[in-house]
Length: 213
Image 1 (tube, rainbow, N blue to C red):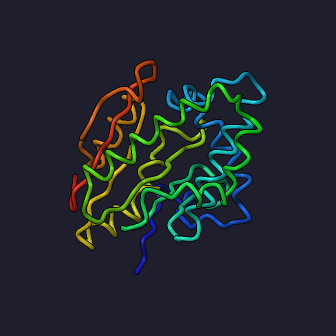
Image 2: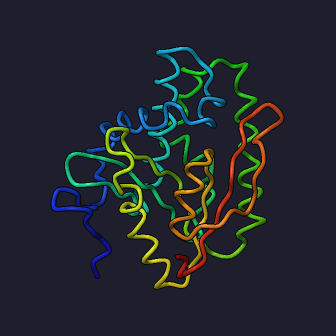
């Protein structure tokens, strides 16, 4: 069954290959350069900040590749969507470390590690709000030059369509109001809205029921 679609003859969705990870990491670090949560978690000065961000993105991509649901566009890479199938989220810390996150301390000052502890709240909320099996959107990023061209929605389509066929909900977290609006257009509803911690930016958790419009 074909899960892929096209925006135009030049943009087709396909699986991200392991050989493309380094290129994707570099492009996605530009896409997430101004993301409020990443700026809070990684307050380093350049170039340490970019190296730390690339380390995190690399770990997220590599830890999810083995599940077979990381999507991108045919050359050039215009964006990436990384999903975890039902029963596989949240990702165990050990898996992230094995995927390369162990390198993060080399790029992040020890005084900033306490900020990362606040991410445990996400795992707790995911277990509370989505106790039934669900698809988890670990990462969705579009290269800045290709944003607002329908690429993000195209990258979501394979799993949203599969989730509808399976009768499965989908779940995600995001950190900007513009992203909330984008996901709402694709059938997601807000579950929670609150700051990551007392001094951190706000974030939203969202879910999409099967057949969400």
